[in-house]
Image (cartoon, rainbow, N blue to C red; front, side, top):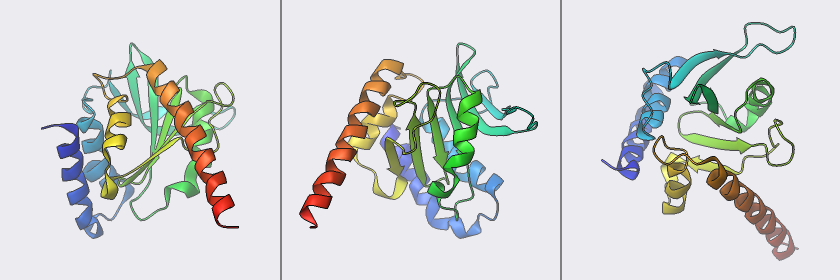
Length: 183
């Protein structure tokens, strides 16, 4: 089954989200299958680390929900929220974790919306806005091409950074164009 089909299965599952009562259930029903669709073994602690320790200064016991590892280095940090929560309201938490991780990419998700962040503006400081948002209820071929770059087989740091940079500027141009057209 290809990535698109796997994501459609997860999207279909989100139709029954009213049965999901907790953040942990959201992780099990939606987020872990999403990571598996990208080719990662969620049960291999060398590949996907749950509850990754992210102590920040004097604040101890901070944990990132999932960290994807490659060659013993974090390549993607993932902060999960209950499906009922809006992901935009929690980017400050991911922002804090970003500082203590060597990852260049972070994801904030509620299981049906995935906001992808990078550090394009300042090294090791998460950008304020996501460069890419995936909504499982509105899958597009373009989105699949971006996601494939995050997959286990397709991961390529430079290609993702190039895409992130391009997407960032495209969003900025669209926003300016929308402002101009709505005057």
